[in-house]
Amino acid sequence: MNGFGVLAVAFIINFLLMGMARLAPMLFVASIERYNSIRRDASLPFVLCYFSRTLSGPLTGYLGNKFGLRSITVFGCIASAFGIGLCFFAEDILAVTIFWGCLYGLGFGFGTSLLPAIVCFFKKI
Image 1 (cartoon, one colour):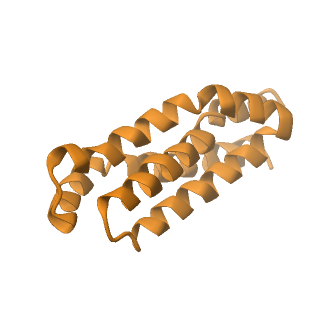
Image 2 (tube, one colour; image 1 turned 180 degrees about the horizontal axis):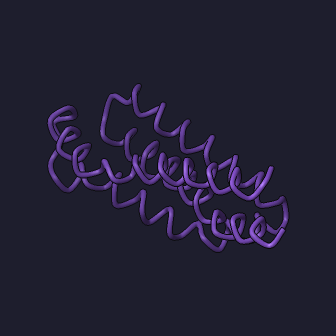
Image 3 (tube, one colour; image 1 turned 45 degrees about the vertical axis):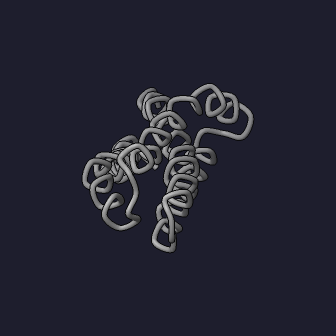
């Protein structure tokens, strides 16, 4: 794959994963209504998502060196899509907290943290 193809794929990954995370305010209001929860409980999945993304950085770097940048990024994209998909079947706010906050948050971190390194690697070629 040439440099422009890598750049396009990195843009799409970042657009989709960051786009879902940027919907958090709208999903926050919807989760209050859907799960009849208080604001504190409804905000936990979205706060935990960014916490998981940020906390996964060192682990992502280590796994990227061990298994390769592309495989960790693909795993992160699959994990985040799986986490969002499982939120469709959630019946309470605790399930949304686990699926969105933990699974999507870790996948979000794995999927986006290594993109600058991938783009810089293919820029040199």
